Length: 342
Image (cartoon, rainbow, N blue to C red; front, side):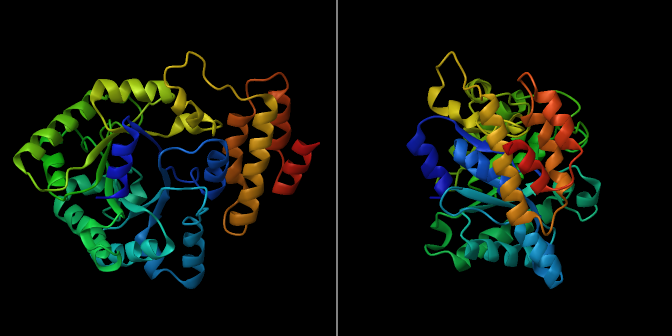
C-alpha cells in the first residue's frame, strides 16, 4: 500500500494538498509553507524527465534545482514529471527514488503549447497508448528500485483534466483506472476551457462514482484515491467540495498565493474564524521566501520570478501599497530584504 493510501486511512478526513505550479511551488515557497503549516502532501513544480536525463550537465544542474526539498520539513513530497518516452520517464523516476521523494506524479493536464508539442501534459488525453506507456515506466522503476516491489510506499499517480476539447470521462477515466494508480487528481475543467470557466466539481463526483463501480468489478486491484482540483478558495471550501463530491482530497493551487498559512485551518475545520496573518507575518514570510530563493535558486532563476509574490504578500494592511510599489522596482534579493527588514 502506498503512503498516500495509508495517510488517507490515518486521517479519516479528506486530504488537503499543495498543487504543483510552475515557478511557484519551488523550494523557497515550500519552505515558507512548511514553516507556517504543512499540507498533508507537498508537490513540486513539474519537471521534464527528458531534460533530467538528456540535458547537458549545466541543463541538468538547473533542472535538479526544481527537485530541491527539505527532507525534514517538506514531507511527504511528490515530484511531478512529464515525458512522452518510456525510457526517460523510467530513468527520471529512478533518480527521484534515489533523491528520497515519496512518489511520482505524471502531468497529464498542463495546457501549455510547448509541453503539448512534446506530446505531454493534456496532449496525453489524446494519446492513451502513450499515457499508458509512461505510467508503466513509473511503475516499473518503482518495482525495480524500491524495496518491497510493487507494494512499496512510493506512490505513482496522475494529474489530469476531464477531457481535451470536451468532457470525455467515459473513455479517459477507465483507461487510467486500469493502470492501478495510487491516486488520480482531476482538474475539473477541459483543456480547451483552460482556467477561463469555473471548475465543475460535479465531474469529480462522477469520477469517484466511476472509481467505486470499477473497484467492485475488479477485486484485488489497486484502487486509486480521487482528488479534485480547481477553484478551491480555502480549507473550508476544500472540505465542502470534497464532501459534496465524495472526493478523497482536494489539491489547492492559486489560493496559496501570498497565503502560506492556508493550511493552518486544517485542524479547525469547524471553526468560524480563519487564521488571518498580520502585517508582520506577511513581511517576515516574504523576507524568508526571498532569502531561500536567493540562496537555493538565485544562480539559475531570474529574481523577477519572485515579483509575482510581492503583490500577494503586500496586501491587507495600511501601507501595503506603498511597500509593494517600492520593492517592485528593486532588482536584487539583498535590496528587497534590506528594505523589508528596516
